[in-house]
Amino acid sequence: MLQSLKNIFKKDSLPCAVAIIALAFGTGILSYKLFDSSPRGTQKDCLSDLFFVNPEPDCELYEKKLESMSTLQDNLEDLTKKYLTEKKANRIAVFSRDLRTRRFVGVNDTDVFVMASLLKVPLAIAYFRLSEITPDLFSQEIKHTNTNILENSSSQRVKPKEDLVFGNTYSVKELLYRMLAYSDNASAQMLSTNFVSPDYLNKVLLALGLQITKAGETENILTAKTYAGIFRTLYNASFLSRESSNKVLDILSQSTFTDGATALLPKNVKVAHKFGERIIVDEKETVIIQQLHDCGIVYAKNGDEPYTFCILTEGKKYDDLTYVIQNLSKAIFDEMSK
Image 1 (cartoon, one colour):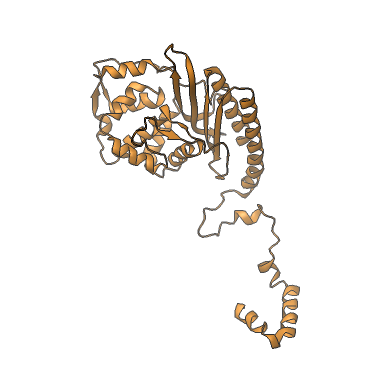
Image 2: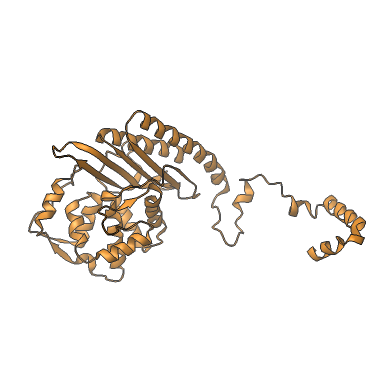
């Protein structure tokens, strides 16, 4: 067909070409191929016969979410501006992705913050990854003998449900649970100095799209967009096995932290999430600046409408930062669960 068209466009065949093209449009042969009039974003975007891309699972849902995500983007921008103007926070970043349609929204989502306790999730992922080739890893035991761990744990503002007992021995499995569910610093420090080397952890961080601490740096950093990607990776089981991914998210769904993203959500909604806090004080123990974060997956509508979220904040007052996280989380939920 194409070769035939090329031939008829020769100079001495132009009158004939015009007649043939007119006939082709009249019969509809070319009208669909050259001028597809399907509205953008409707059924054409949901075609399932596109070989190289993941098809949209539900065209009706896809259309609905396009409008909803646009509304959510506007809402998040307005709320972020409002909270910054009211000085609830000095800096705010937020990112969220619908895990079914893969559409996402974000405000300041590439701004850099300190990872703080959010590092515990990659550390847990490193252990689960290692356990897939070392089956008895979780049954291995570590004795709590480091007094520095006690000092560092006492500085936690959001305290774990219960403290480790100095001198006692704990299994890796128990320490992983405490680290994720209670955000226990003592458990994290015991795990970070046994079995998983700094080099291995750095490789996991890089594989998850996170930056590693370089020479002379003391803090791991992140953005809302990159960290939310960890939860998408867990949901899709694209780094760990399905069983390991499910176990990590199951433990995170038992988090005892209730001051953040889950506070204003319905109590029956499952949320697998991790918070992080970083506090800087002066010599008088007065807070100079603090960061508070909460990121995870909300399984809206009994898991039928799952979405990732990551809200990072920086300011001076803990109550103000929790207010920001709670209300941004509620705004996301209200749109995502429609």
